[in-house]
Image (cartoon, rainbow, N blue to C red; front, side, top):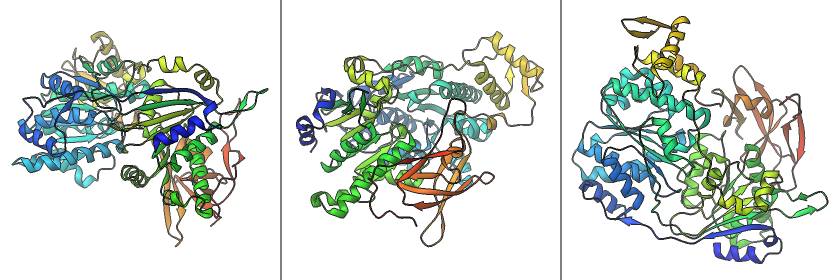
Length: 611
């Protein structure tokens, strides 16, 4: 089906003239290696049961380096088997040492849930091949973990999946409850390492300093395995995050089908003014072509509102096909659940439902923000449509990498917006294709960030004089600790610095720039029951869900009746309108509570009326 669509696009008078560039990467064969001789028999049988009889070259290299007690970072393509690369050495250590523990860190709870499903499937086979299968307990420990289950996880889990935020506030400050775990900690796996950059990465680097300090206190010296998407400096980033020597493995040995990357510049509508057709509406047209050819695809939009607009247009046109029955052969494609959105603000169960729909094929098109850039398992999509340049070469590659899996061919289309940067790339495709991915930069020694984490570290354990903290010099560290002394936050006695405040420092330090408080979006079901449809961070709520606003969620418009600031709840009712609202902006006031109406093209599905 993909070949016929590509041939159609090349012939279509509306589409073909607007292709600024079309790059085809031929298929490549896998570079494989037999199982290493020291791979435990149980793991060998587990892999064979799952149809794996050889390792990719980078998986074999990861095994060799890990068994040599070296820290490694894997920087290979999307769907190249990085998960197996770090699971094999960890599971081998678990089998050979009944007390060994491992900590897996993921940037989001959703990704931890996804990887938990992957490792659980591997363990379900492995447990049938060993005697003491109860010793391979794996658990998620994050903010959603019930309090009643936490004690058992701390005591029994051999592999704990978590995130930096939970490690920062829920694990390290209470390390005494994790003494058995930290005493036997052998591996720390940091997945999606490229996300740890900027302020967030600088915070996480200090969290890892604290983690290593706690592990050392309990007599452990864990080995690091990091995995990253393609960035300009994977080795440098890894060594800055963990402050140890790290071996780079970037020889991607996985097989690849034929890949097409297209830059599409919407047609000119007014040459004198340089105006072009809407990149958003042109993306809708291309996505509809993919849907009509039964090609499962993802459409990446840059903002939450763009996601909802594209979703509305796609569902609206699908509704028109249903009502007119213009194409009965594709009638099964145009169901209410075959075109879905995916962004922050959706409830966790909605996201899991969409992810499962992508894996089993019931969701044909998903419109998403960069929330789907991360390595969540969404199956093998045939195409990716990128609406506007996302701001970095690395992000383009990551989004394009969501299309295609294994030997199947795939296409990625970047639709240029009217912005000068997009137009430059559309007119200079050689610059785009020849550019290297950007570097991920962090500064763990930033004064304010470092001082915050020194407070947390001091709360967790007293600092001995000349103890050291990461790469900070003894003189600078002593200067910072003396500042805390002068501020009555610390006390010095017997050559040690002790935390003196009553407050719990980690609780007041956010690793991310997002608001910790969310606003719940509440509506009413047909039977009158209150239902929660989603959430919005409190900083965005003022201009997205103020009284009178029209909020869009999964292609449905809602009228905001009330926004309760004290309770952090917004009351919404579903409506059927041909407009939405957005905040007014000017040079003096960034965002105001006033709104303007923005009309939608008449693409909304017929029959959507106010309830």
